[in-house]
Amino acid sequence: MPNPEATSQDPSHTAASAQPASLPRLGMPAPLFEAVTTHGKIRLDDFHGNWLVLFSHPADFTPVCTTEFIAFAAIAPELRQRNVELLGLSIDSPTSHIAWVRNIKEKFGIDIPFPIIADLNKEIATLYGMIMPGESKTETSRCVFVIDPNGIVRAMIYYPLTTGRNTAEIIRLIDALQTTDKHHVATPANWKPGEKVIVPPPATMEEVDARLKAGFECTDWYFCKKAV
Ligand code: BEZ
Image (cartoon, rainbow, N blue to C red; front, side):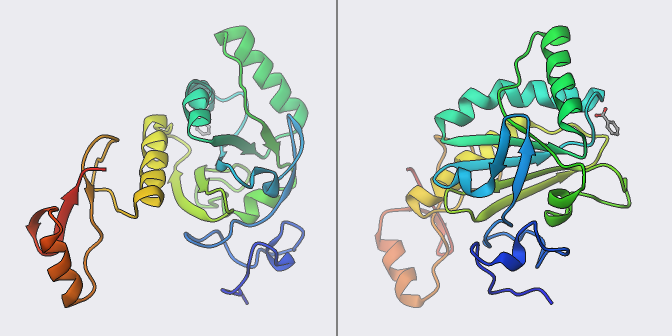
């Protein structure tokens, strides 16, 4: 039975369990894991204090995945500036990952700077619900988990095998989450840095009065924006 009170220290939701205590949920601690990667053993806890973009791809040496890896490599410096690390994953061996990374360098001239988890026994893919049996029982779909510096799952994106992801959206999402944390605001549809943000809706009559006097740009009592 999933335990909604599970914390990041609770071994019942680590990769060691036969069954995950629960799939990742927004606002809950990300399931802990220790992984074999192209950069050696890595634990989720190693990223404490950093944002993490954990993403899965279906398989090494496939064309859409290759375009995605090149795109992720291109945004790695922009993510670093935002204190964000990248970590890839597929159900492939370390040898396959290494050979593919070397092939991308040789054929496309691109260095892949981030580690890739070799999840041959599907342990982490299962823990994070990355396998969509309706698509494939042997490959992970294109999943993205944004995990904050406290190890909390803040966003999840799922794309099918056939559709490459939009890395500009991943940067936009990080910018939105970091703006929310810094200013305690929400962000509207298609928001980009520099644009006005949404003041969270008031919960009491008192807050309604306070916000209408606060000098925000209000279209109505529930719809106020401000610059940050
Ligand atoms: C690809 O990366 O090209 C791919 C992988 C799995 C299914 C379809 C396409």
